[in-house]
Length: 106
Image 1 (cartoon, helix red, strand yellow):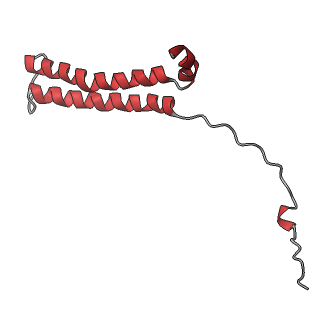
Image 2 (cartoon, helix red, strand yellow):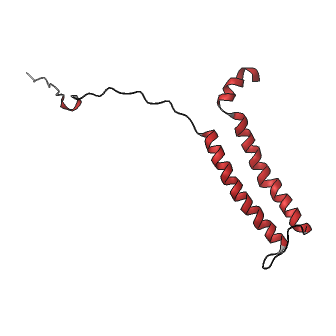
Image 3 (cartoon, helix red, strand yellow):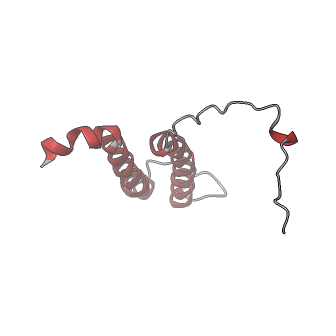
């Protein structure tokens, strides 16, 4: 079944779309968990007025905003459709000057 659909899936760019989906899940969940663990262990330094946990949370949110913006730009390229060009129409100079004949009633 996959062999028959391989060409159709390649034209739809399904593999990069799936990779972006997985990247969003990893960045939103795993990265936040790692930064929170580092903050709780004291790896992220505490500087007033923020504690280590709040600095870790703030860093996580700032990174997530930047990363999601970049992913949005990439997925926009992947999901954007390419339309066929419109056919050229022949230009008619007399198009506005044509008259319609109305038959007279008897």
